[in-house]
Structure formats: structure tokens, C-alpha cells
Image 1 (cartoon, rainbow, N blue to C red):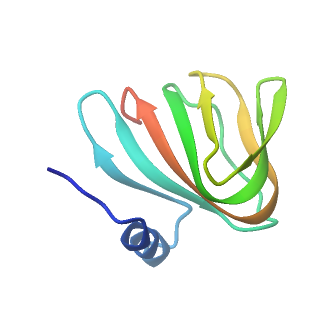
Image 2: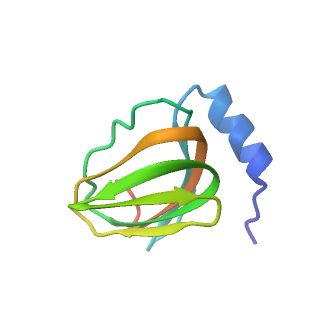
Length: 105
């Protein structure tokens, strides 16, 4: 079994001084923790994999293709492969679990 604690993942991500920490990689998927602080810019480009975002904490808007919605703790957003998307108007530090399928390259 592989089990993880969000506080430990956040500490590891912060220690590596990056916005993203991939912590699980399997044959058909990978999972990571993505962090953007309030007011920060999201530099993402479209990915070649489908993605699911689960917002652990924070508040922001996300635009996926032509659609925009507000997200907060408990929000789940699906992003199809190749579709432009970005978090923006981040009003509270954002922590998001990201599931890629197939695994992120």
C-alpha cells in the first residue's frame, strides 16, 4: 500500500522550492500536489494527458478552454488533454491534487 499525508507532501514540495510535486507514478496515472499562493500567476501550458484537479484548500478561478468557474476547497475540475487551462484570481493560497492519466511525461 502507498499512503500519503498532505502536510508531509506540502513540506516536501516547499523544500524543493517548486510549485508541483509528483508523489505517485503508476502505469496508468500519476498524482501530484500543485501549489499557487494568493496573487501568484499560473504558468501552465496544455498537457498531453487528461487531468483531474481536486482543490484541497484555497480559492481561485479556473479557465478551461472558453469556460471559467470559481473553485474552492472540495471543487473537482476535469481538463481534457490538450485544452488550454489556468488558475487565476487566486485570492487564497491554492493547494490542488492533480491526477494525470496516462502519467505525466
